[in-house]
Image 1 (cartoon, helix red, strand yellow):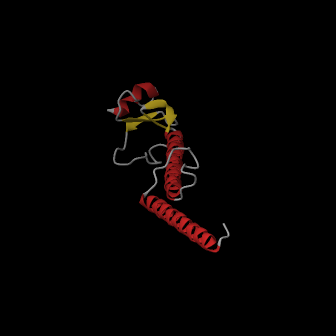
Image 2 (cartoon, one colour):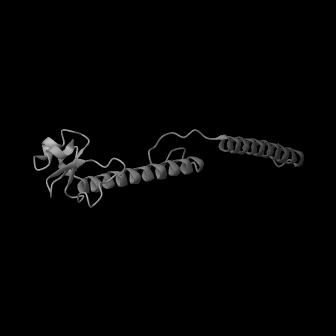
Image 3 (cartoon, one colour):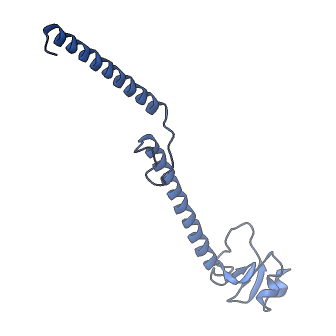
Length: 145
């Protein structure tokens, strides 16, 4: 069916989606659906057209490679950002993310450490008050007050 458009125009050939236009030989052939790219003996990549006449396979491969590479780089950057945020969440620095300034919710270890610090501070205050009362008692006993 596609061979009838040979030596005609690319637009006429590509009206049928199963056809492949070879610009160098002006041939219209069936697209080899079992293969992703047309074989070189059928048509060179820079001359092969499919779907639209203004894009050849060579440009299509380059464009798809650039888009795919860009997507992979973006995915890698996103993964790195997520890992950095998780690390910075574990190492609380001032209660905020170093990058975006969002408030962090302290995890269980941080809460336990804060409770322990508070208990130590309270015990220290109690000991300090007890020592002060002992010293005051000794001063009264010996009349140095």
